[in-house]
Length: 557
Image 1 (cartoon, rainbow, N blue to C red):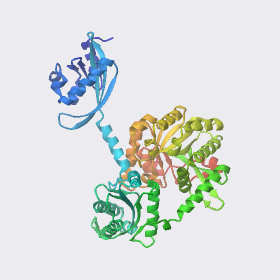
Image 2: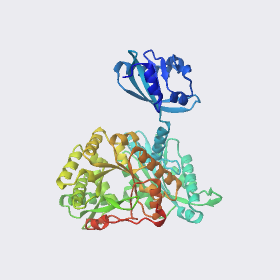
Image 3: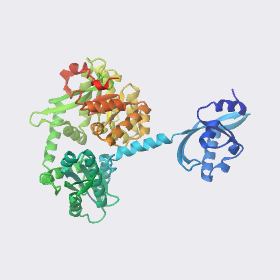
Image 4: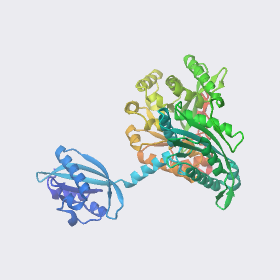
């Protein structure tokens, strides 16, 4: 065992990272060549000197405290810190320190790794997660978070607010006439005009192709009509875009956020109802009233009918959409999707009945029914995994993991063939108990997939801690990736991130060969979408499970 400085020096000079040794008085006794090259120093400039002689006082004090902790506890201590190099550029360094004995005395051995690029990449992905890449405005997730906060303040009579949903009139004609580059520039300019119309603390978001939203808050009197009139005026002014002049209008749905507001989802739904009414005549605004929304009664009808269907199973079914390997198009798994046909309501879209289930507490029984049905059906289908969606509401149930494992045992499906798809927002906002549930399932062999990646506030540390197996890129980015550089950049960023973290990257919503070719070249591992197959009833699983979607000729090699 090496016990003298000369012996350690020979070893540390061979290490591929910056290394140094300090004694118990915080005096530098060794620094290897890589550290000298990286920091631009000579050994003579630091050896024999203390941290206090080399660094600013606050930084030297932090280094000394870290050394003392290592010397006292003889444990490995890891710290991350932003420092400035000799050129004045900020760098993020990861330092690992441990205690070694040299000539019978304790010393601190430290390694330094520059993780600046990694942290910058993570920050960029986080920015993309809460902003619209084209306009730089907030996205839907950021908007909804602020709406929830405004709802909370309104409930306590601490301020007034209003949500405006805007849809551009005539935008498709601009795209068709001048091309998508002009259309994109118009969207950017319109976003800037909206930003100038409201206050610095109000939220302006792009929530769709040519759909925008504005959340206006005011501690005093809020002029609903005045703000809407200003938005109509700014939209009607001509846009000078790339040597062309374009004219559009806008339709606006307005909903005041008052003491009876309940949630961001309900507020947005009301704004959307008002917008739908406004678009009947175009270039006008409509303020939401209860008389506008007959769908509330319809929603209650869905709730009652769904509760009955879950008791009897009548009308409920699972359809299955194939997931294919990007390299050769072979089907390797299926995603289970709930379907519901009611005797009087007819076919109820999943977007309707799943939302009702989440709001009314029915999502637990519904999710359990889908999981049991899908796992039982996969029993006779060899070599394919089954993916089942999990709601954030289900993760709040501390019995969730027990139920999943019980269903796997009941249906005799190996855990490795089950994949639970959890939305990005659900994971980020999961509490400690939910995180432990997922880790328990992961340890049992169940795979975890992060759905709709790129649309929420991703915590990369949380991804690592949860041992997530997959990330699914949201269809909104996938479908525009071959045409729009902003979407392409997001797809490439997520693919590179997945590769760096050892995650499988899945692209959903694939509808064209051009999309498939782009996604394959970008590094996506699995693909899903109508290009391969729509979701099929259970009696057609064997037909699609043997499918090998042929690759286009130009993609060979």
